[in-house]
Length: 395
Image (cartoon, rainbow, N blue to C red; front, top):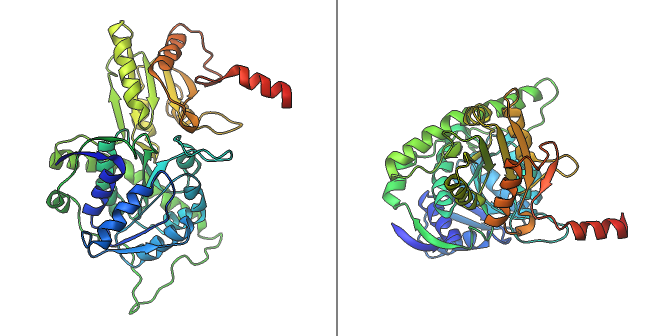
């Protein structure tokens, strides 16, 4: 059903049609509209049976989800920025226990200084917490990925976070094809918990594990993540067959057939990048785009195959490792090791700074003309005068 709808409302509708039995959430911008909408659906009886838990913090929200999931309920939450970091301990608990919780992360910068606008600092900070991370490039993708996330989480008994750019997507109104309830019911398998707390058969979960077994526990976490690399494309194809849309999968290749220069990115910036690449193609430049939908687990073999013919790879990312460099860029370097390709790391759009077509044109023009060093970390639209002033004043 096509609707002109806010991104948050589209996601809430998709989550509701997956029939979660327990939702626990704490409001933090820019994800608040999602959980407010779900709360209204529970209050009015549109979403039943479902227990909506009002908690005292983001840590409490995920902790409640851990208990509910361990008791056998289909479970959902959402958060953003500092809220995700406040959950950090519980994130590792959820993945370590192998609980199939689905969570929306409305990506937002992490302070200090306080900044409520979009970048990927929050999700990237938690990239190694054992959660599958799927990144949406549009509100249609965000809507569809949530339906697929419940199948993936419950099939492997792993937690899944669906990342969508805060404000850029969550608060944007656009036309979205909302899945009908009957179609979601037919597509999404019923929940069959891998583990279940049962008063008639009591067990302890989360008990202490010593050196004799901890490595094996972590290996099994890793094994399930790698299994997701096979399951995610399969679920994506099943979704395409059921709904007629190709949302999902591991990667989104765009005009890669003969591309010598490939731009790699995640999230909503992909739309702008594709428009810029279309213009460069019109000018005779062999440029393509590789969108990353699945960042964790990292699809190294698939990325390597997609980039095997490229001479240059430009990674545009909305977060970086302070004191080290690009995060996505380092993963791309690992995937392309041994190939004759130069990888450029470009940090862009921190704290909600617009990533404009003009800036991307200048960036790619400099790279195509060999005016940028592939061995340095580059910052798109960096105000060098301001940086120089601060260094002179306080450096």
